[in-house]
Length: 158
Ligand code: FES
Ligand code: FES
Image (tube, rainbow, N blue to C red; front, side):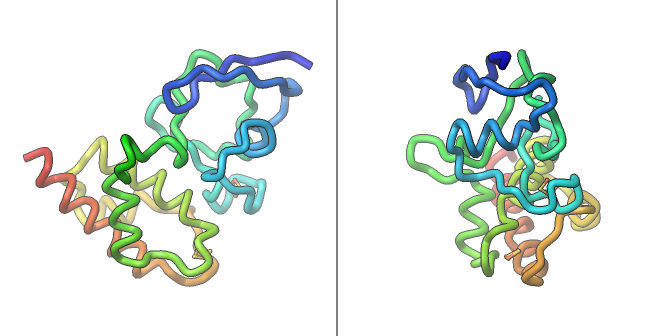
């Protein structure tokens, strides 16, 4: 099986994978990350989301083999020096989870959106989460948390 070198959360990791094996398996089964989750496996729900060069991608359908020399960010690497990312902190503050299984997808999409545009409008936030699913119906609390994070991040950048 080929070995791929992946840049994950700022560290280079070697992973053995079949040529068409999705990144999600490398992250969860081989590297034992806890953030990305297997949901639908069909790019429909978003719970497997990671950022590749700053863009959210569905790791359940993207082959590991295509990701060498790209920067991969995961939920596991968001906190720095024991401090949660502003988006994570807002999700905790607003209690924006029921079972929590979907949280990875919402948080990673929010990080991508708000780091690029900390002054995102409510409409841009709404549009930024098309196709991210929560089966527990926690969307209202999630949107509240994203707006709290937006308000903190835009103040910090002002
Ligand atoms: S598990 Fe990847 S989008 Fe659902
Ligand atoms: S909190 Fe359970 S799926 Fe979203």
